[in-house]
Image (tube, rainbow, N blue to C red; front, side, top):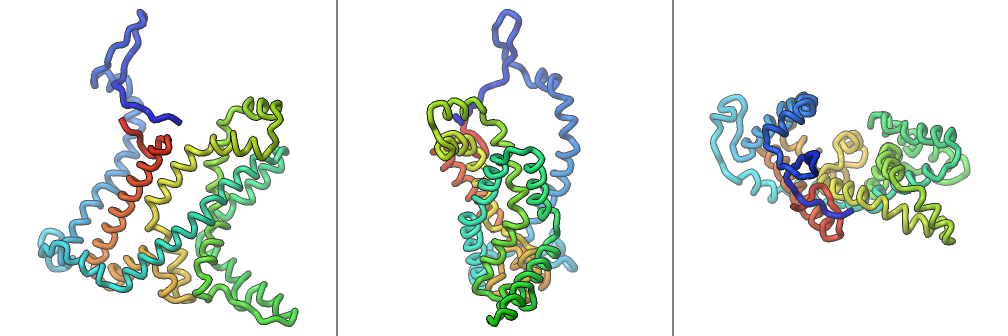
Length: 323
């Protein structure tokens, strides 16, 4: 997909000449669309922009009971300096980044492969049935997902019982901190991969079927058609989602890790979101927790900008295009 260039909106007259529209003309033309988007804009302002002003407490010795935001003393970057002296924070960062990197390799390709598999099913009825089965776990809560895995892979689970009945020692993967990263990745794949395939199925539907017919006439087999037609057609979507995933690198989840923290210990399960909860909410040091959250947002922004620059270098538009 080529990079788009920024141009001023123009209106073509009956004579074929282009006239630049003023902002008032654009407002008269687009006011119904603006009204339709107004409720969502109000939600974004109320629940995103206004609360973001509260990040000022990251630079304060914040006390909600005595001074509040306006009366708490300013301490500058002290909270940030304390963060990088906290071994628990450094461990949370290391765990989060290692889990993100692991899931980029072993989870991110799964929805793509699942979409290709679903798209290859000829029977529409069978395809609809398989889609319903693989989409269903997305609507389960993490409590239910972890309970199912506990019944399958826990110390008293189905797998352990089968092993004991056949003379082997039972296993308990739900409490093994050494394999915790494999456990959470398999849980994420089972829960979210089916739903994630929807985007790639939509992208597959935009590929011209005539390209496949022409390639088949030229003697290209299925794998060559997939390599030269399907994957290039999916590349813009893959690059876009990869950029968004990198920008969300420090957000690997909260519920999934919080529910399994007591089973495997904080050494393996402490990630960025659980650290913010334990250090900020549970201890009452809200300024310290806000500093950690603000650091997370800044890192995510830098990762998005860097990944988007790489996308431009590869000839893709990315999240936004350069003018």
